[in-house]
Image 1: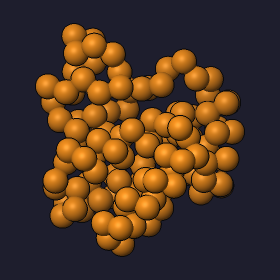
Image 2 (image 1 turned 135 degrees about the horizontal axis):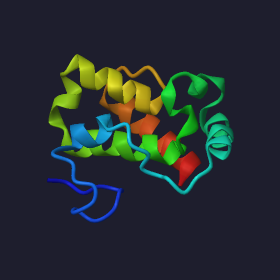
Image 3 (image 1 turned 30 degrees about the horizontal axis):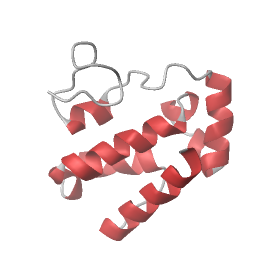
Image 4 (image 1 turned 60 degrees about the vertical axis):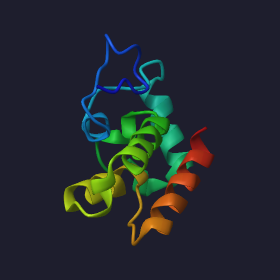
Amino acid sequence: MLALAGGPPSRRPFASARAYAQDRGNKCPGSAPVRNLILNLRAGGLWTLRGPDRWRHPRQRALEALALLLWEPAVFVDPALLRLLTTKLKRPLHGAEDWIGAYRTLWGKVR
């Protein structure tokens, strides 16, 4: 079991990096939704306002994408995981360099 960015293993266990990235729970609960909306606009413009993540802190998307990139080898071949990664990074992706570059860009804006 993984315990990633959500507290001790006894409170927020995840069976895998995929489960962590797919979990709809709020992993940054101390941030106000309106502030998150503004941060998402700053991190990626209007395109980031599509989808349910607009009310979540953009750092949550970055951490979920990082979990997929580091610990989920199927992310490079599984179409469902590729869509999930594209959603987390809010950019169309065309290869490993694109994924890493998109992650670096997002992390640089939300760290």
